[in-house]
Image 1 (cartoon, helix red, strand yellow):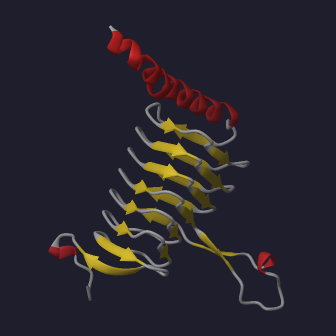
Image 2: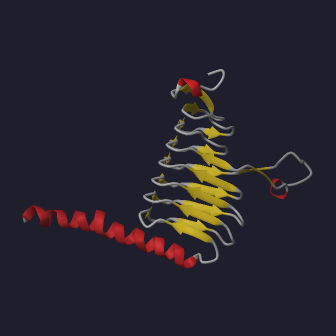
Image 3: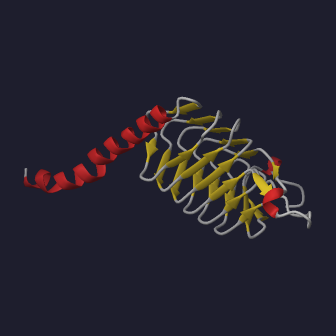
Length: 201
């Protein structure tokens, strides 16, 4: 009995209150976004300070048992589409900015302070300010079981099971089951099935 009483504050803080909070955040997101195609599975955890900027029609589908632990910002532009499969995890301070399409596979994991963006500013016209030159866009796909570690910037697709080292900038597609590091990220190792090994690695 004494042990149960000692555990009561922990239970209230880390189980009961947490569940109530993320359920309320999910309901609030659904209530405030009737103008878009928004689906959030009931088993998904919406952590504190999750911010969704989606002022015009678009699509955001979040699978079951996904987890956004804290400070996730999703900016989904007009007509854009973001879909993620089950058990995707964003740890802390993620920024996702999508104007075309982002697809995230099952059990992909994103470390602290990851940024995902499907566009780059155009800048080569010296007669115009960068903000007046528009963007180059590309849809992004991140495969099942991909691991993106802390402080990475993702500007292109990542294959199934690939691992992106901390502080990397992905500017070119990364094949499945490859370890890529650096800025820009380059493949330094392959650990997948031999028949899928990329040429030259």
